[in-house]
Length: 214
Image 1: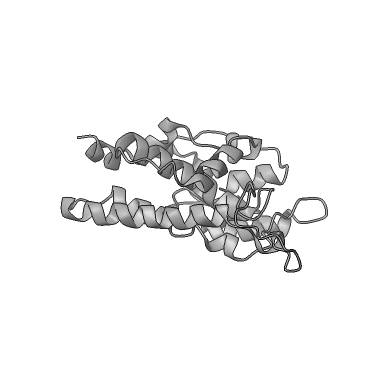
Image 2 (image 1 turned 60 degrees about the vertical axis):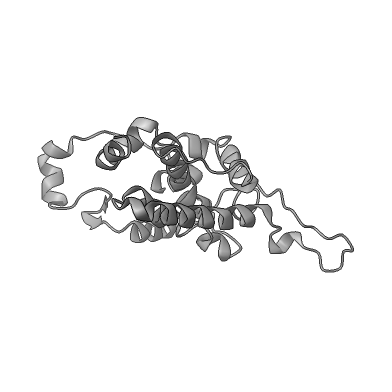
C-alpha cells in the first residue's frame, strides 16, 4: 500500500532486501524489537501504517506532489472489511463454520462489486432525463487512482489469488465491477510495480496455505 502511494506521487524508490533473522546492527539499534512494517525518518520510528500514511501526506504534499485523496468519503470505507473477512475465512480451523465464513466473504465482495458498478454522485445529473443505472468508473472514486485504491487493490489481489489457488473459490464472474476494477488496476504501473507475486503472498502465509492444501 505504502509503495503504491509513493509510486502514485512519483517518488523514485530504491528497494533493498533484508534477512530479518540477521538485521544490520544499525537497524537493530534504531528499531529494536519492531517488526516490519515500519518507517524511520530523522531517527524517529513510525510503525503504524496509518501514521506512516499521514506522515507521507504531510511531507509529500502539493503542489510538488500529487494529493490523491478521494472526493467521495464512501470510497474509503466500501472495501474496508474485505481483508478481515478473508483472514477469518482462510484461518478458520472449524470445518462446520467454513460455509458461513465463505458466504460472509462473498457478501462483502458483492457489496464492493455493486459500488464499483453504481454511478458516483458526480455522475448523476438531477436535471437530466436520462437515468444512469450503471457506471464505468475505473477505480473506487472515479477514473483515477486515489489513496482509497492504494489501501484496497493489492489486498483484493491477494484475496483473489489465495481463494482461487488454495480454497477452490473464485470471485464470481457476475461480480463484473470487481473484475473490471482489477483489470483496470493491472493497466497502471502504480499497481503492477508493487503487485505481490504468488511467492511473496505465499511466504508470510505459509502456515495457513499448508493447512489449506492438505
